Amino acid sequence: MQMPEPSEEDKEPMFGNLGAFVNGNMFAGLFGPTIGVKLSDADRAALEAEEVTQPFGPEERPMGGYVGLPEAWNSDAAQAEPWVARAFAHVAEFPPKAPKAKANKPKK
Image 1: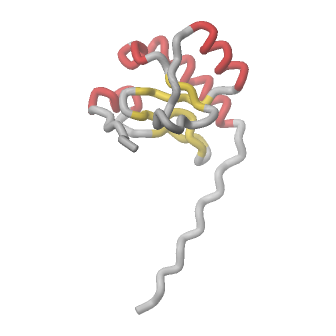
Image 2 (image 1 turned 60 degrees about the horizontal axis):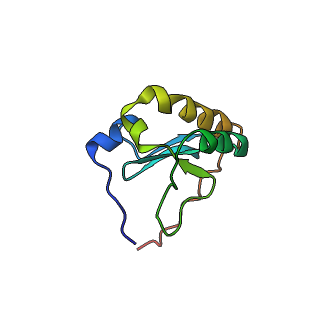
């Protein structure tokens, strides 16, 4: 599977990171130039009815529950921002993700 690398320009709307999290749960991410957001079913349907969206993640296995925002919005924060805010509000309702237990390293 070919993983696209985001350019520095692609990373700019994501503040230099590849994912944005609330309570340990990702609500927005970057896959190549695509900004993906995790929306409620109703919000996702509304966005898809208004705009041409795209799958988010690898072409052969997009991430379930996420939708890729229109690529033209990468340089138009005013259009992307309300949907990122909706994703944040939606995912903020999820229970916090429990930290993973650290693996015990064998002593030498």
